[in-house]
Length: 589
Image (tube, rainbow, N blue to C red; front, side, top):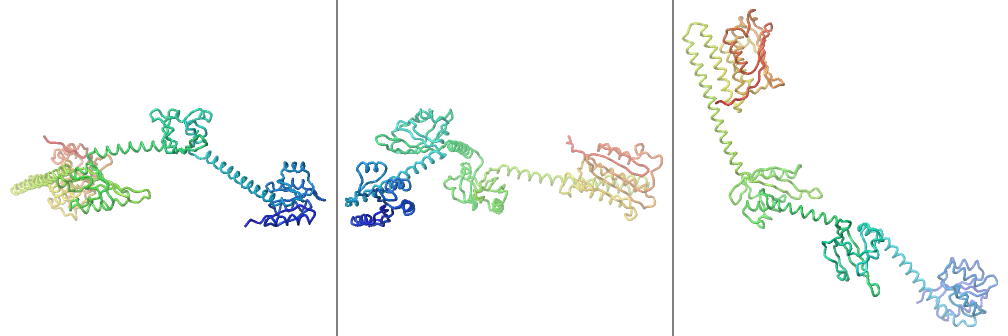
């Protein structure tokens, strides 16, 4: 069923309008009509009702058809306009048709009206469709041109021989040229010399090609999607490009890097293995395969944990657990079952994280350290043997010194002269001070240094016992920090303290009461400062420690020189100050 049409009739005679409507119904039109005869009515209907067709009389008392035609063309140029008049000359009709009227029908020949209306509506519809199509085409071309110009990818259009006919700004930027220059050249002009020649016939069916182009002495790679377009008897080639220069450079750099990595992994002696958190091997270097004596195919997918020595399983699992926590690096030494039996392998393992910072796998670099381990074991056994030997030597030296002290004690028991007895006792004390050092050494974990505070305390206890001193009456205030001292320095240092304390106990307290102050400290310049002071009887007025014939003072001076030190005496305060250095071990010849 045809769509109902809206017919605007410009007619001042109602009967004529009815005749027009009757003729339209007779021709089978489904329509609605409005009749007007004044200009204001006509304008309102054209603008607001928007009729599909206008049927106008030539002359009306208050209006005319020519003016109506002009208004219709101004307000609704696509609406068909047919003159239906009783008197209209042929010249006038031709003139109106030139000015835009669709047709004319005489009132006395209304039988032609149906055909004229149907033809007018059909032409109007075709015109409207053609206009819509043109507008769509213009819009499409506008969008195409915008896409063509604004896209960041190069777009090239050229003939079948490769001559450029059109291009966008991205293409000009890529080729680094100007439009006038590009129109003078073919695509072959830009091809790099080392590239294969381009056969344009191969592009006739469409394809994707990679073109190495020489652009101002720089190699660029353009990926071109070829689309042939038929235009009558000739064709054009439409190419959408993509700049692959950076991508190709990255790919080449990656290939070089992978080749270096492959050469590094395949030719180094260290083992490289990649495994997942469960221990399943994902990658194994040739050196790893060689050590295990297995093929890469048999290793991949297997678990390395069963190959670890039973005694090393726990520490291996602990190391793998540490890899789950920052800094995701662990160093491990364990025994691995290889084609040559159990071998010690030192591993540096690191966790690999994915783009979401989730644990993906582990990579381990290992080295066979079996020979080093065996050497270390031999060295440790040798050290233990030497340690035992050294302890035995210290023990025997101490025992021999004690035998000498005992012999002196037995010898002195047969002597009645007290001065001689005292000389024997002093010699015993000196020998025991040396023996005490050897005793401390073989009982200590450190065979090269002794805890000097403990040594001095034991030495003073022995001296108090030797001289029969009551420690409650003669008190000693000892201030020695945690000083570790080698045997080279401890023996002369101990003898100096032995002499100073012995002299104090013999001469300073005739009443059997007093106090001794003893301090040993290490100074900032790595020198030691020894202070010995007492509150007993003062020194004789004529006493000079550097000008005396007593054995004790001569021995102190000699020992201070042995320690590269110096000694001062404050006679009023009865204070000895001795500054000395730690002696370094000198190899004996």
